[in-house]
Image (cartoon, rainbow, N blue to C red; front, side):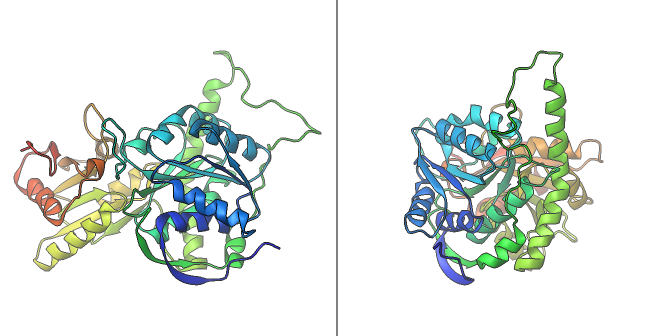
Length: 393
């Protein structure tokens, strides 16, 4: 007899929270390969399977590439599937990420954001997932352990929507969430079952009705049409995200506001866009500056894919300046979020946009760093700025 989860509150790490989320989602297949700081997620799931708390097939594979290949195969049979990884492990999966998205499989994967070497660094940095932004996966950046658990549940429902059918990766910052304990409300199993129905994959493998998967395509074949269909589905995901987050708010009484969150933006003159746990620090600074009479605000991006272009346009109307913070490195014309925001606001009137690179390799982004970003927006020309880095202006 598999034990069912009753509603309770507990102090737990982010990694434990997402493992419980996968359990509540009743995943039927888990592929596991360890990498710091993700390892304790799959260790916790292994314990759940061994203790008969979770009715799932647990497979230890030989690499991250194999981990994604395994969930692709299991999902094609109609079994809700899950895996987790981080950093260089995610890079090793890169080829299979394209395959899973191209096969239109609604896999959910947890990624603990960790820096990419060299030099070796195990602390928080979003470069690993930003490198995967064009693979066809939906991407969600979590701010808290509670959100990390809840996003697993919402993630499956969004990904499995018939208008979407794209995989989803949900992120938590290394150690800041993954290994730090916070209060988390764990919903009861029945409430989750009512919210998240079983996976019903219409094109799953059926030995009585064989069909081809991932077949060869010539230039005149359906290749471009299939890619356009994926793009259309990514756009349709916006509606699904809003619908699912609203349903989750109604049933679990936690509202994640769709694709992004606005904080003290009603009359803001200056604002910063951030994601992940840096948004928590940013909110504190905004609140403190508000008490001193500064009209500042913060926009937290939850979904990087699909990117919330329309929501950002609406949220930033009337600003004197906008700062965009990237905790990732893109060697070119600026950070990934900075480029996406600039593209979203192009032709919408002139709002000066400042790009800030901060917190790479897990370096702390402190109160004074946020205050410095607001000072830069008030006193310097728009451009790209490095925050709290030795030798920078």
